[in-house]
Amino acid sequence: MRNRFKGKDFLAFKDMDREEIEFITDLSLDFKKKWTIREPHEYLKGQVWAALFEKNSTRTRNAFERAAADLGVRVVYLRPDEMQMTRGEPLKDTARILDRYFDGLFIRTFGHEIVEECAKWMQNPVINGLTALEHPTQGIADLMTIKEKKGHYQGLKMCYAGNIYNVAYTTMIFCATLGIDLSIACPEGIEPDEKMLAETKRRAKLSGAKIEITSDFDKALSGADIVYGMSQYSMGQSEEEIAHLKEVFKPYQITMEQLKKAKSDAIFMHCLPAHRGEEVTDEVMECDQSVIFDEGENRMHSIKAIIAAVAD
Image (cartoon, rainbow, N blue to C red; front, side, top):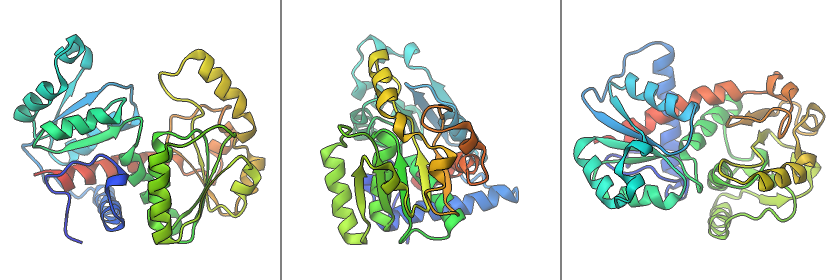
């Protein structure tokens, strides 16, 4: 496939088809090979990108800065509390000014409408580093990891244990698109966004993937090739909400006993940061089936490929 991303934004998996998802994943794996053998790839030397983070970050920010450096891109980190946005300047004004200064914007924020608004007013590419709706750079890193460890997508089964928000939505979309059966294990009452669920079902019909949301953890684990752990709560929730979620998610903690209910060669994945002792035990995090640090490294390669693909 030719590069359809040049000069475009990279905001969500729901905006991409199968060919585009596989193109970026394969490009990411190619960049990883170059990085492994220390083959220089400063393809974008001279470009300057802005990084705007409204949420704390370890992996995303550092992966972006390292990926950009490898491509020859200089990064200017923008602190929201030092910008006029916090004093009421319209986002469309901020976006258009940043567009005059920079070759692209990498943004991690709360509402997905914020990245869409930036993309609307900017001519240069905007990359979503995480919103409440999706986490697309994580999705590509996850697909890299699955392909490295399993060699293919079609016909695999993933058990996802955790709350349903950004990473879950990205996972739902890529599983449905690529033919990966997905069983989300969570307490009754945890409901996905209706539009994202409808889009997932639409794609699953085309690929043949089986998608289910169940409170039966054993059923979700049975026959799983991949067990994916996810936080039970997210940044910004109240202490009362967090306490409630911790309680209702207790039966869904991934332990070695639970991991044994999946296939014997199942891999354990987690986007990190993990709350050890909550959604997953320390033993699982450190076991031989855990691929979390390979997955974490792949964030750098996925972001690099995305920058290279969209850069104009």
